[in-house]
Length: 204
Image 1 (cartoon, rainbow, N blue to C red):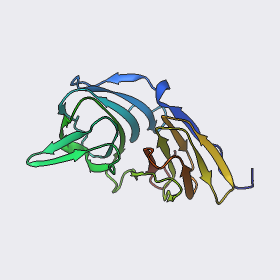
Image 2 (image 1 turned 180 degrees about the vertical axis):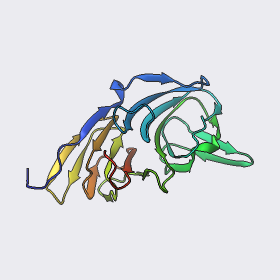
Image 3 (image 1 turned 45 degrees about the vertical axis):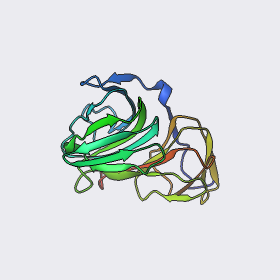
Image 4 (image 1 turned 90 degrees about the vertical axis):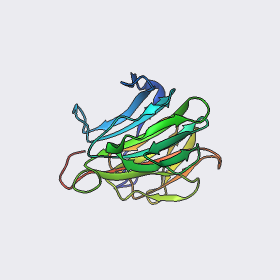
């Protein structure tokens, strides 16, 4: 490894994450990662949910949320008179966690990727989630970050000359994310970059 290159990322497979049932019975969640470590009241959280029935999302006041459909026919999220259909392959939706939209399944269960940041991108934790396009560089602009892909691939830090395998359905996570990363997977594969930017002076 060259001097100054980042350590290898953590691998957090979906299959190893315990299943947590929703309070309203509409699905279940597998938490891939939350922080700070060993703190019950997380400030940021990454999870994969299985939505099996129509119903409202839980309300998270003071939390910024990102939501993306990984598989299934998709959902419709409703807030008042506004209705938005989301399908696998669409860009992640960012919304205020306090709004708790009603979720309707279009045609059967879906699997969905979620990022939650407490503090709402202002004086709290920042970051976000975007679709990963094969071969394109992602500029993290964050303290921590990584990628989640549905199929195996390879992750490259071209600046440092490093590369790491990306297992299927696994969150590949850097506690100190490189400035630029590149993912190589088939063009049709769904993958997402996720970033968490901690306030100055806060421990990872």
